[in-house]
Image 1: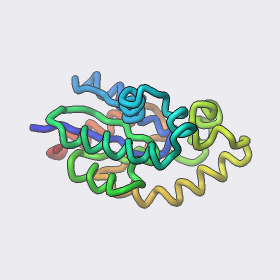
Image 2: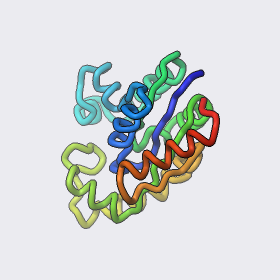
Image 3: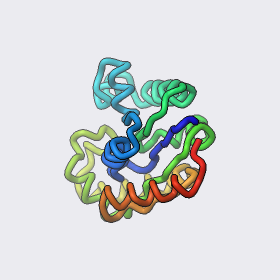
Image 4: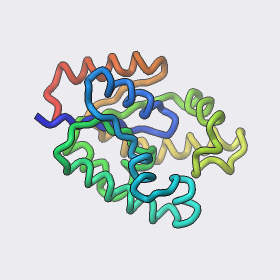
Amino acid sequence: MQNKIVLVGYMGTGKSAIGNELSKLLNIDFIDLDGYIATQEASEIAAIFEEKGELYFRKKEKEALEQLLNSNRNFILATGGGTPCYYNNMKLISKKSSSFFINTPLNILAERLTKGKSKRPLIKHLNDDDLTKFIAKHLFERNQFYQKANYTITNNTTVNDAIKEIIKLLNSTTIH
């Protein structure tokens, strides 16, 4: 049986932290899609955005996603915040995996992202006041894609609570 678990949601929701810990518990490889692309491109994501542009990155992101989802590998994949919003990515994710939307409240996202702004190409130029407005607008635009995931996890507590909820859902259903 194929086990592909894909975590989607806005940047700062904890997809990588949740995916990394969940992979240890389930003994399945963890892949961070941005890390996977950075390795393939031999470049940091911020540098790809800066040097080649977002459209180039989104094309590479789609190719990497298709490559992983069409492989025979079992894994837990943390996508980038924008991954589900481009091309037919979310349709492919939901068809080829058990997908989980990690839904995190705006105030928690703003707090987390303020701390790590410099590492995130889409928000590094924003001042703290504009950041919350930017996140709110982006969430409004992107939630329609995130909500197409097979399951929704509300992550406003801890990584361990989110993992428990995911495992509970996996145990109550047949995963892809």
